[in-house]
Amino acid sequence: MGDRIVVEQLTKRFGEIEAVRGVSFTVGAREVFGFLGPNGAGKTTTIKMLATLLEPTSGRLQIEGLDVVRQRQEVRRIIGLVFQDPTLDDRLTAWENLLFHGMLYGLSQAEIRRRAEPLLEMVGLAERQNSLVRTFSGGMKRRLELVRGLIHTPKVLFLDEPTVGLDPQTRSQLWQHIRELSRHHDTTVFVTTHYMDEAEHCDRTAIMDHGQIVALDTPEHLKQVIGSEEIRLTVRASALSERSRWEAELGQSFSGAGTELLFKTRNAGADVARIVQAVGPAIERIEIKRPTLEDVFLHLTGREIREETVSARDAWREFGRRRMGR
Amino acid sequence: MIALRGIYVIWLRELIRFVREPARIVGMVAQPLLYLILVGNGLAHGFQFRGAGSVNYLAFMFPGIVAMSVLFTSVFSAMSIVWDREFGFLKEVLVSPVPRAAIAIGKALGGTTVAVAQGAVILILSPLVGIALEPGRYLAMLGVLALLALALNGLGILVASRMESMQGFQVVMNFLVMPLFFLSGALYPLRGMPGWLAALMQIDPVTYGVDALRHLVYFRSALLATITQFSLAEDLAVTLGTAALLLVVSTVAFNRTRSA
Ligand SMILES: Nc1ncnc2c1ncn2[C@@H]1O[C@H](COP(=O)(O)OP(=O)(O)OP(=O)(O)O)[C@@H](O)[C@H]1O
Ligand SMILES: [Mg+2]
Image 1 (cartoon, rainbow over the protein chains, first blue to last red):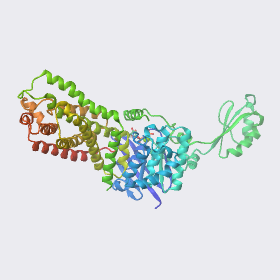
Image 2 (cartoon, chains in turn green, blue; image 1 turned 60 degrees about the vertical axis):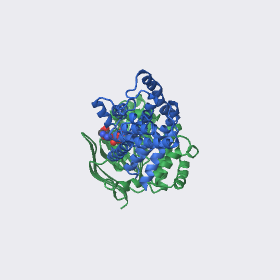
Image 3 (cartoon, rainbow over the protein chains, first blue to last red; image 1 turned 90 degrees about the vertical axis):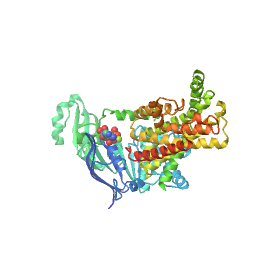
Image 4 (tube, rainbow over the protein chains, first blue to last red; image 1 turned 45 degrees about the vertical axis):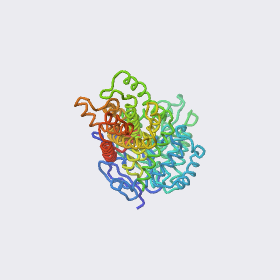
């Protein structure tokens, strides 16, 4: 009913490598859906299958009730995709890139102009629309790609690591734009990232690792997987002998060694007050640590988000990026 | 409808990119001239033309050099497919509702237009080698160049759609382009060659394009029979047939191409 994307038991095999292993999920209309995972997790492969660019090895894929494998042409009309690697034509102007894109979707020049204006305005590129794309910075190119992906008002917009290589400011701006999209247009945004903090911008996030979804929920719920917050305190060494008295008073023991003590809790705000009362002037420093999605990932997979060795293919891609001056 | 739009967009982009790169245009026109001046003059003064004492070698070579320009330009244009499919614009087009076939056709038409435009510039220089073309023959030669360019673009797209890397494409193309050029009769006539070489030259589709061009250059000249190898009708039929065949095959191949 309300589900715009339905994925059931999706798998993709490249010879020996099983890049995606039995993934299932649904995404609702107007949702910002995140796909979080380390390099090689299978994010791009999943997007490519959803965007009709790769045939699944097995499984069922639907977008707006259309079968992605059998009704490719129809699906292509209602999706937009911003690739992980830039695909603008940098010898054309920004406007020409948008114009050509719109024409590929059968829009008239006037219509493309009408749609492009507010979008270019939104991402702050209106003044530069007649410049060659090769004169753009990485962030400008990314924002232009976002606009281009929207010219034909897709029902689903796929963004494959849209913020890679951008500075923090540009990243947060881009996320603002993404949020605005789902709010003001009837567009579902499907976005991949390997930045933990970015998953927080999503309505729901699937955490992917080794081709499988290990968790799928709202960022809030995901963090509750960890169960608790943590209070970290540093105490004066001379007062350490009182540790067992503090623990008795709080009714819970600390973990940690030496002067660095950790206190696990579900209600850090209230417990900080109790700790201050119990430990008193022996405290040198106290802080509350809330779990990040980084911790969630560590908890779920036992690993930090890692850097994989680059394959020849990736190396070539990188070479291409550099050669194109990106 | 969307297919026609797609063909138009791909074609237009090819043209805009061409016009925006003056260095490439200069290079593409200068290269054949260099061949003409260095190789042409060298051969003209070093060797005697067999069978016809009074042939101006530079004029003989000129159609071959124009064909060479078309050959190189067409290959260069197809080469960008490999790059674009991996890194650029073409990836974008592949997710759009434009049919794959339209992309291949647009690309072939774009590459052909560019090749013919360059040929047109080089042909203007024909008086330098003692060829005087009136407008009718000039246009007819452009027509032949267009057919030849279509065939060669088809070939380039066919190879490009099978290749995943630029290196692979370049290796394959070097193995194709050089023989296609040298066996085309651009530098020496087919007639009088040893049997195996003559056979290879007859397989090379570029031979017929070059021969057709010579028909037009030596139109009504006493040398026509000495210089040309086939009838103009044969030349045109073979070139047209090759172009049609390669376009169909390359479109089908592109349709099957790994999409991203
Ligand atoms: N065309 C291909 N042929 C062979 N293996 C592939 C191909 N594409 C992807 N893979 C493999 O599939 C796995 C998943 O790759 P994918 O690109 O989907 O990862 P990702 O999550 O997008 O990673 P990244 O964060 O680096 O973009 C990797 O092991 C990769 O090497
Ligand atoms: Mg990826």
